[in-house]
Image (tube, rainbow over all chains, first blue to last red; front, side, top):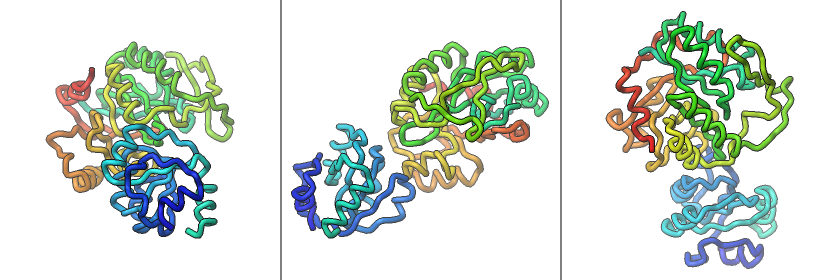
Length: 110
Length: 233
């Protein structure tokens, strides 16, 4: 499934609509401790987190995640979205808790 | 000057109840320290008592607090005057959510006077995150003329490297606190833009018990210490 399909199914908000949404999502990783995530998760994963510090973007690029899904209404800043767009990193907001976000992805076959 | 700039008093729930103003100031004096800072979790409320005690004992006091940001990173705010720290307290009050707690589990939060008498037992938990990002917290410290220090920067809990993976390049901190020399090497190795030339390193005890207060081990010149506040607004 690619990011656009995921948005179509979930209606999650996409903060970076100008980016390529045809990237494939292969699996997902959940975590908020950046030092932890830095050494884990696989390329192509969707990363579900409530951490919205800009360091998230560096970690996501490093791990070659397909997108970041901000869960649970964590407060995303304009700076965060702006920098994500610069890095070519897609940001979605599920507005539901991390667990429910992960379950939804599972239901979609991810 | 021999220093220990990260000491918790009995106001921090996780610190011993006998971390009183007189006990800490006298212990630091006996150990031969020249300057100490009291840095309770998200609070400056014990600083007025420490101000009087430190003056009585004849030891230099810096007025501090250990703030927990929304990313759960610990940052020390160190102020040169009691007034600056107490005005920082007003900012903290705005940013700290009221959370009731069980002292039997978390420990007591005791505000004491200069005679070590308990004048208030706080009812809201201090060891939670403020509603402020690390950048907002550092800006607030600077706005109140304080110095911002990344506490136990590579520690396993509540350190910037653990919570945020690495130290952001444009973060406006004034010093980095480490537990040991190897931590400095680790930071320099993993952050090529951080060097001894552009960084003030501090090694403090983070004492929660009297016995853990630093010995006469870590030295800083008065001139170097003064550099902590060069970035103030």
